Length: 294
Image (cartoon, rainbow, N blue to C red; front, side, top):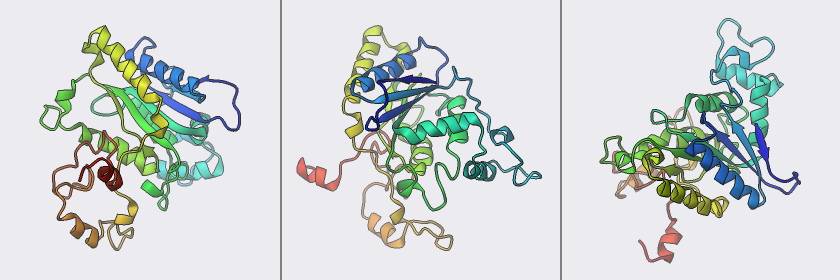
């Protein structure tokens, strides 16, 4: 674990960078360093969890709790870690990461895209650190989630070009690729999810282009914490009961019938996906009227 910044004051805000790349000479490392330098200059305390350097364990196993399990005959990871969190019996490495999450105003996940997702070591961080009770509960999900006052974002490199991740590209729409990560993990825990920072195929770009990518990231970081988050469907649109099946309320579905697009990337309702729903913050109705759009 690397901690960078000035001496911590009660007013100083913290950013956590969860970093997953094997090489300190990678483009991902350069992206991490730009973020660290820029945010420290802005007065933030920056903590870096370098998962490979930490030998962070990816596998979620019974070793993640101390003491006897509640059900030794059938170990259920979610249930056991929830009770262990409540009773202070999680392993030290998990507890250390949870402390960083609690302190952070913003979490940046920095990684190379592996098989349309995060590397296994980062997925292990999510599986093991974001346990029930600490990161979510059945009563506190999505926009009502435990971390609703925190922000999170994905910053990643791809091997593929941007055109390959278009709706008509061979890999398919990047918005669909990002939905499980941004909605199913980050927004599920309540985070306000900032638009991802995507570095398209840097390994196949000339040095000048890679430099321009880093300069663009540095410029974005200057206003990052003030950005509007991505748009997700709020819980209030759904019947939040087992009797109602947690389905979209009938009046909301009826209202959406006249709309040209689905509600979100995941809640498409059989309609075209709303453009760039997972890669750009969408303007509000007030914003659209202000700049002449309708």
